[in-house]
Length: 83
Image (cartoon, rainbow, N blue to C red; front, top):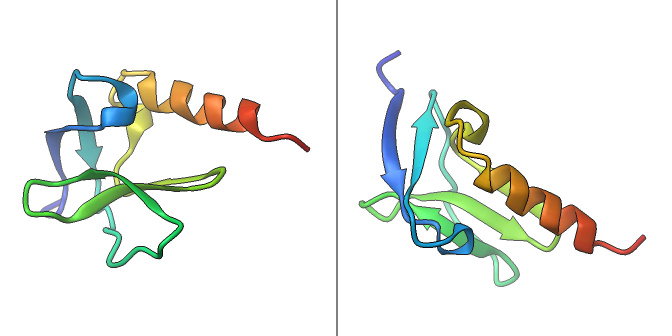
């Protein structure tokens, strides 16, 4: 899979340690609106993780990394939603 790769990302909402991300033919976010928070970008500025309210989107597979921080972050978002 030529478009697949892995890299370390800076994701401040997850803490200081880099998050090792696996991209498997991953799409990228081309643009964000004013309500969207960019959580991570590649070195070239490509947006690869975003949040808008309770919605979270990534262009990589956090479940492959073995690092639970993205899942814990998602759970904190879900727990904060009142409904």
